[in-house]
Length: 120
Image (tube, rainbow, N blue to C red; front, side):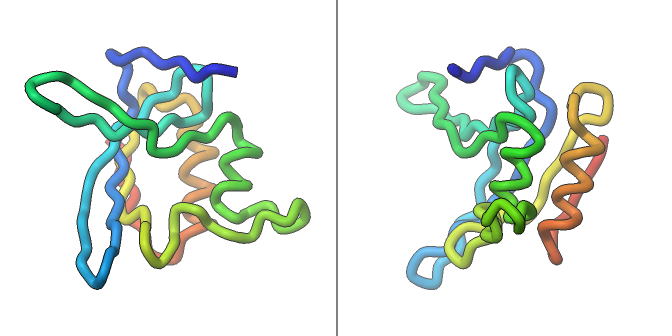
C-alpha cells in the first residue's frame, strides 16, 4: 500500500533529538493523516526547492502500538521513537484535524516517561 496525504492538511509537528558523538541535534517533522494513522515527514529546502523525506509512519493503531513497544504479547517491546540515539521529545497535534487524536495521545502517554504533548 502506498502512503498518500494532502500537503494542505498538516495535523501537527513532532520534535526529535538525535545524538551523535555526544552532540544533540534537534529537528522538527510535519505530521499528516492521509491514508494512515500518522505520517511523519521531514520537510526542508535544497537549492530553493521544497524537499521531503519520510521519517516514520503508523499505518493503523496496531502498527502504532508495535512501533511504540506497547504490544508485549506480539513481541514488540522496543519503542522505536525513544532510543539512545534518536528520541521524540515533543509532539503538537491539531485537535480538530488529527483523526486519531485520542488513540495517539493515549499510546504516547503509555509509551513515554518524558514527552511534551501539546494539543492546539
